[in-house]
Length: 197
Image 1 (cartoon, one colour):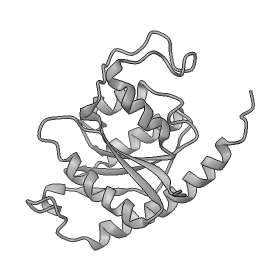
Image 2 (tube, helix red, strand yellow):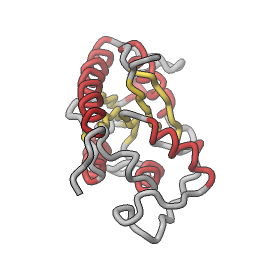
Image 3 (tube, one colour):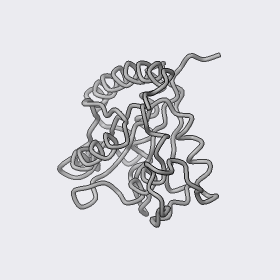
Image 4 (cartoon, helix red, strand yellow):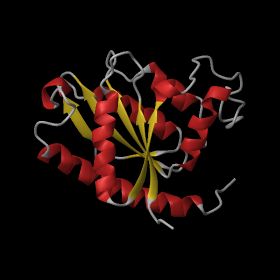
């Protein structure tokens, strides 16, 4: 039986023509090469994510009835020990699809660690990442300082979706995955301790 951590790599953009699957595929390969993770790539375009949320806030009902089309997503988030969010910047923030997926869940994020891979024009997704740190911290998740960023991603990947220069991004990914592994194992142990009421 594998002692690997379960890592969910989440593609945050669902827009037509998005580049997220290319970036997520590259990062998932880096995570598999790292050797400490069983990788599950979650594409939010495959989940039903209504923007209208339940009437009762998650602090009062952390696991509300969810649409049938969200059941698989919820189960995969439940199973994960850690997450890496792959996100672009949309208007200096992150996609609405990603916020909907986050807000429909609560206990799935709590006590787990979250890393980020950003891509966009000049900022490389850093504006989205900074906003996501605040959101996940509110949900009692630990966000990593380390990240991977692809500014002007359209110049960095070739027409087949391969990185033109691999050394620097691969080193950044390894550094983030090392920290992700450390925090994910520490938090898994901590989750086994009953929380104070």
